Amino acid sequence: MSLRPSQVPSSGVRVRFAPSPTGRLHVGNVRTALVNWLFARKAGGAVLLRFDDTDAERSKAAYVEAIRDDLGWLGLDWDEEAFQSARADRHAAVVERLKAEGRLYACYETPEELEYKRRRQRALGRPPIYDRAALALTDADRARLAAEGRRPHWRLKLDHDDIRWDDLVRGPCHYDAGHLSDPVLVRGDGTLLYMLPSVVDDIDMGITHVIRGEDHLVNTAVQIQLCRLLGGTPPAYAHLSLLTDAGGGGLSKRLGSLSVADLRDDGLEPMAVTALLARLGTSDDIAPVPDRTALVDGFDLSHFGRATPKFDPADLGRLNARLLHALEYETARPRLAALKADGGPVFWDTIRGNLTRFAEVAEWHAVAFGDVVPRARAAEDAGFLRAAREALPEAPWDAGTWGTWTGALKAATGRKGKGLFLPLRLALTGLEHGPELAALLPLIGPARAADRLARAAVVAEGLGR
Image 1: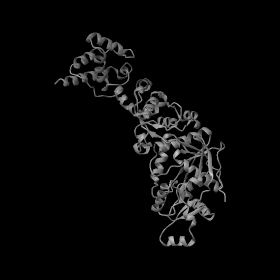
Image 2: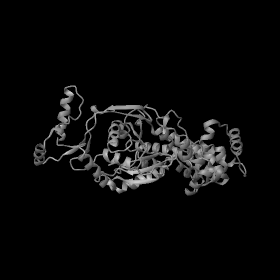
Image 3: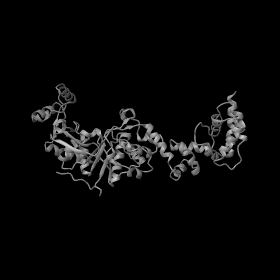
Image 4: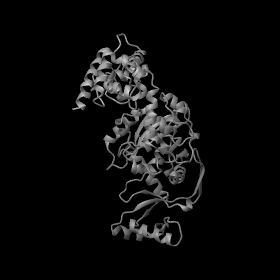
């Protein structure tokens, strides 16, 4: 009985991303989804989103929707969608076939008994692999164990061959199956472990390339043999080095809260997230990418190496800022309008170099065109601020107004440097840092500038009381 793969795209490339809908997507599995998507799109192939929802107790419809939303926010579309739970009859038929062929055999050891065996093997200097004791059980033995209330789990009897494949990231790989335990495919309660549904679905769905983390290397050896047992052709495999945090520690525990939802709530740009994750683990420079087309064009799976890549949220923040700084007005315009903060191209060019998150535009729009709370640093600035108000040049204002105004103030008051500029910035913007005031002042305009300087002078007087 052979399994017939579904039709593959004309390019011959068909990948799958198979998350379990038991939680939100996090940085590590998003990177896997992204690399699969980039590989398929670069080759003109197809992407299958396959929900590994065979864990009925933990799989939730809400997580299915969340995964769809997260992928959509990142711009990762897919050509088909499938649920493993809908193929339960197909998986059960394969289980029965493997039992009939003697490839799946019943085992009755408890977890405690298996752990005792492993300890004994280690003590004797042997690898802790299953000893196949269950193969020696007679029908009477199995009847006795069943009468004791034991329910068998079922193991795949491996051929003790040397299993080899040419990994698209790691190069030539091989495992001696004689050094591997026969894997459990069916639990004692009858539910299936990951291994069998994944292989059956990869064959049936025509998956040509499996791209995933290096923690699946040993699984690959077993899956290749199982695929061949079922009459399929194993896909090509690529195993990516797992991400660590900036200090080299595991991501899952220390940064486990870094879900896609967290990144979105933090105001990060999806293109910043994808640009960083697409390059981690490669020798390519990590730089802003304007759109997904450019991301696809620059992708090359052969650039991934075996070194351990480090994910640092600070790098993501810096990349996010660089992307915003390079964003052209016409691209930003619809989002500015949505924030009710479209101050025109001059405003955008004035403030974009100070953005770390796009939402900060609203704050700078208020500084330029709305109302701010003026600040003052010291009581002695009150007189200076009043003098500054009186010295404001006549309209119209342009990029040269700031220099003309501050030059006159310097000559009249003797102030210079921080003593001249910081009181003016605090009064005009309420902030110590920000865009160049030479560009910002004409946007603020004479009326708002005069009002803010007057109010800041009152604030300064209050500091002396």
